[in-house]
Amino acid sequence: MSLIKSISGIRGTIGGKVNDNLTPLDVVKFASAFGTWLQNNKNKKDLTLVIGRDARISGGMVSSLVTATLQGLGINVVDLGLSTTPTVEIMVPELKADGGIILTASHNPKQWNALKLLNEKGEFISGENGAEMLAIAEREDFNFAEVDDLGKYETRDDAFDIHIQQILDLPMVDVEAIKAKNFKVVLDAVNSTGGIAIPMLLDKLGCETVKLYCEPNGHFPHNPEPLKEHLGDICELVKKEKADFGVVVDPDVDRLALIDEKGEMFGEEYTLVAIADYLLKHKNGVAISNLSSSRALRDIAQNHNSEYFASAVGEVNVVTLMKEKNAVIGGEGNGGIIYPDLHYGRDSLVGVALFLTYLAKENKTVSELRAGYPSYFMGKKKIELTPEINVDDILAKMEKEYQNEEVSTIDGVKIDFENNWVHLRKSNTEPIIRVYTEAKSQEEADQLADQIIAKINSLI
Image (cartoon, rainbow, N blue to C red; front, top):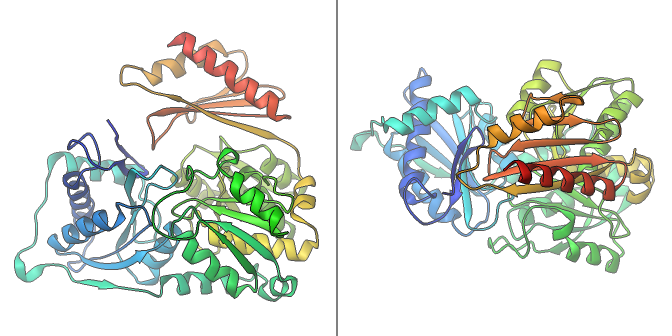
């Protein structure tokens, strides 16, 4: 079974059986449910939704199904075509639309696709709203429009320009300082829409872009999750080109990883750390990440006499806490940057612009920047699940097993040891238990993960 329904949207593999995978009937059902939920919760008749998609192979088919379904409900559709998650998020309020749907399975392999659902602010719908929508889908409680009331359809090709201009207009993005440096940047966009959007941004910032896997054809040349083990090609190309650094984004461009000038990983955890360091130097405030993110962000915040708080994992949870604490910066340790002065969504484009500004002003190399931060090393592993495994039971047993340590159950089970930590949680997007660890060396982090996995397997 590869159909996953969560607050992250509806995600599944293309093909197969209805209700087990993301088939055309499932796409229609959940698009109908979301459209119906919006109609039930809006006090107006004429609704408009913005849609956009990444470059994965199934995107055109899924987009056609979603568009026709929404029109069938009497909802108008503004189609951005090939886009990015943050661009769709920007365009929903820009166009004063009532919501949005992003067609992307983010970092998942090419056989996956998904419907990510946005409210009128261009932010992911809440868990409560998602539950209401799923209940409508379960009942198949849809009422389609008569022929004279079908929704209208239009396309827009200016969304990237609007998104980029909003970034360039931000006071904390210093366009002239970046241009003066003539940075050379290698980009790996995993043959998706980052290959369109990021070069447009870099060009406006006066950077030379060396493109690697930037053809938006959906044929991912490597696993699209921007982790070290998948990024050997760009690490080599950065050195060969004598570039200032490398940029890696996932298929929908909401995760940002960096490569230093020596071809070494900057560390996706440290994308957020570096940008927070820049922003908190200029404005004391609050920084937010989730429970699975590095302690380094807490350390940086404390260095700037600022506060740090951690939320449950999931962008919607991070955003909720950011609003509650009026945070200056937030995000997730997977390279997801949320800069509220632009919008409340993970955005690699604004992350690139803020990082370039910091790099230009500090007058250091990327490796020198990285060397100035606390050295923590993350282990990110996973345990594949089968239907008979009771995850909640396993997590309860792990909580009891380590009851003498500092344990948090806000989101899964996080066990804080004196010099390291492990966080266990069931994924919202894949049938796995994620095992996050952090320690003062990579070897220690990996060993801790292996020990915990062995313990879990013994309990299974």
